Image (tube, rainbow, N blue to C red; front, side):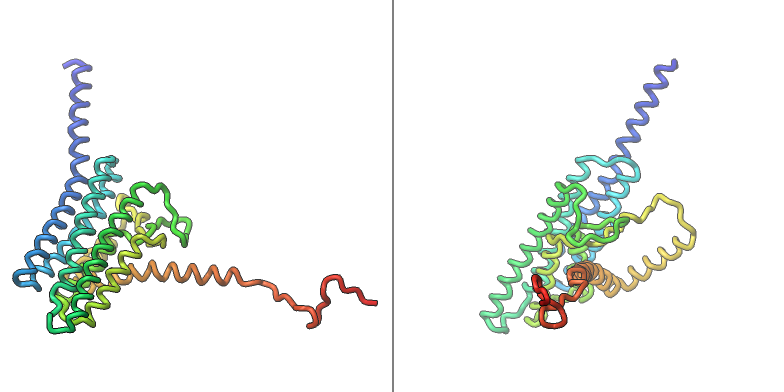
Length: 299
C-alpha cells in the first residue's frame, strides 16, 4: 500500500468516526423524545385506570429526560460535533418532552379528576381555565424555544455578573421539571379538591410566564466537565445523586422550586437596587428654608 492509499484509508476511517460522533448527541436527544412519548402514553392511560401509578410514571419520565437534554448539547460541544440538524432535533424534542407532555400531565392531574360533587359552575370554570392555562404553558414553551433559536448573545433585562452566563427566561426543562416534580411529590395522586386546583392553576400559569419573561436564570454553563477535578468531587457527586434518587419526591421538588424562585429573587433584587440608585444623592433645600432663591440679591 503506497502513501496515497494509506492517506485515503485514514481519511475514510476518520469520516466513519466522525459520523459516529454525530450519532452520540443525537442518541441522547432520542432518549429525550422517548421519555416524552412514554410520559404522554402514561398520562392517557391514567384517564381510564390506576391514575395514581400512571401519573407518577408520567412525571418520572419527564424528570428522567432532563439530564439527557442537558447532556446532548454538552457532548456535542465537547466532541466538536455540533450541527444545525442537532439543534433543530433538540428543539423539537424539547417541545414534545417539556412542552406537550407536562402540559397534558398538568391538565389531567390537576383538573380532570375534580369530582362532580363540587359546585357545577365552579367545576366547569376550573376545568376550562385549567385547559386554557395548560395550553398557554405549551405555547410559552414553544415560544421560548423559538426565541432561543433565533437570538444570538441575548441579554436578560436584569443583567448579572459579567463573568457568568445566564438564560433569558426560565428554560423549558426547568419549567417542565417543576410541574413534574410537583406531581411526583404527591406520588401521582390526582387533585380532587378545588382549593388545591386553584394554586396549581397559578403555578402552571406562573411557569409559563417565567419562560417567556426576559429575566435571568442561572445556566450552569461555566461548569466544565472536561477539566480535571479532584477525587473528592466524584464522591460528592455520588452522594448528591444517591440522595436525589432515594428521596426524589422531596428533593427534586424543592430543587425545582428553588430554581424558580432564584429567577424571581434576582429580578426583585435588581429592581430594588435600581430604585436605590435613582434616589437623589443630595438634598435640595427649598427657598425660604435657609437658602436663597435664584436671582435674589440682598440690598
